[in-house]
Image 1 (cartoon, rainbow, N blue to C red):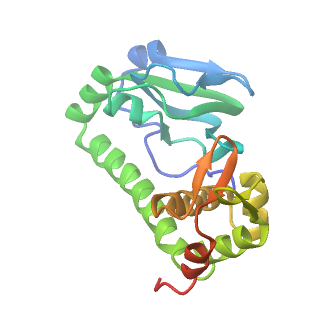
Image 2 (image 1 turned 135 degrees about the vertical axis):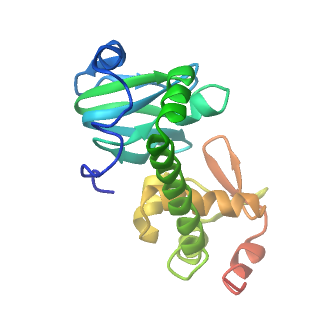
Length: 217
């Protein structure tokens, strides 16, 4: 995925007066971790300048979920939904961020209807993008490509068959980006065609996995 370019978003119209904005502004050098998986949530961040990469750890290591630039939000899950962080945010280019806790963010949305609308649209776009990826995986170029790679790599074992590889290798061999490869594996796990045991993929029934190639998309 390429780094997002600046686009109309919340930058320059964040609903905060200069004094309040300065109080919430945070500066980070490239390589700095804004928050990590498992950290307590409570704040979301608006990128005023620079770039941030959001990753999530998986069986094959960290995978990139998004590359964000000026005008974009991240960390909203920790603010809108109580619970620990589910991802890691790392600054990839020196950045100025606005750190907004739930109370300040709510006040912004209440006082500026345009801010609330832009945030809603931004979050809706992310959900729509994920749904589109999931839909694409049901086609020949997604889920089926992954199944073919898994069948080729499977080796018999007591539990059925085992596959020892990395998510990155699976993505490269199936022609998918890391996120789509992860979604494909997760889809097969949800269907009970795969199991993850420590760092190894287990195929309980090779015939069932092979049969998924003939299932309607």
